[in-house]
Image (cartoon, rainbow, N blue to C red):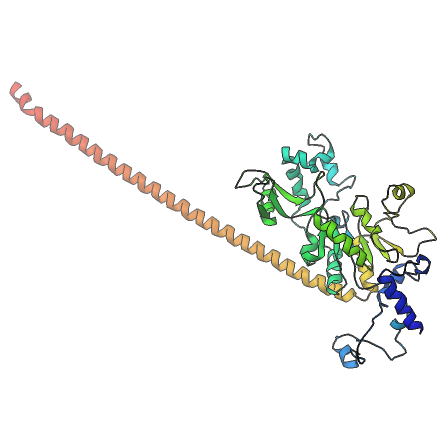
Length: 430
């Protein structure tokens, strides 16, 4: 009866009928070990005429999984009340791309803001203000080259997110990144909410036109240090990132209400949790949901003023009342590697990175080869055209020389005829 009671309590709570906060016990201990134990203890309930889906030795050998386990003494899932299921929204923000070669957005020395001194801006933020951009897009596009260095590639953290998806655990990935590296790493677009937009697409700011342009088109303009204008209406082209003064995408608001109500584990990766409304997402999950922060330092901790302003209680790592928040301090890559290792995914992550890196290198080499072939073909065509022009010029020169020679002959003939005409007169005079 204890098993039935535990499962009943679990489903009552998931349906929202169990509101006894005193009864909530999320983690045995607020550590990474506690979260790993929870991940491995998700309850599974079978409603059927007979037992089925039980694994055997051959299925384990073939890598088909262990299946369900009802009768062995090792079955522990039916005897535990577990608060975490297999849906994992993740947040990744400004510090994550630094390892990918993108300047840190707020770094005091290498951040984008620190490089604005040479521009005569009314304020550092003006470069990302939509009103200023409409009047003068040049400063933004000058810095855009720093946002997209040529060696941009996903990090281990990005591939960890891809692996979470492949394990069937990713409900949604909420990101403040605008580089699109989550897409490059292979996370499906429908799984991603780009809260601050993306460079992946851009559009004409003229509402009557609103023509859409690809990343390759925009990257080519940025690489050539050209402010892009619409070839149709001549209005400036704006990447689909959220500027100051613009509303976040509707997709962010529509999905966050649903996703965080369904969330059973929240992992926050590489963020300062300073920018609203993104920072407030940590408070949207139910108070029975564990929250894991992977970051260089603790952040997002609430205070009295944030509570008064209705911004939520934030994360709580250090108080004795903490029962669900865990901070894994270090770089994003080291934290994600550790989590993968503790979940038994170390080899899976390594294989995924090796496969994707090999594919990326092959693509880079193929692109470089195609570019070289195109350049050689262009050079050959240019040389052929130049040679043809030289030949035509030589032919023209020869034709002109021939015409001149003919003209000279005709001139001499005319002169000779005139002399012959006056020859009888000259003879008579003599």
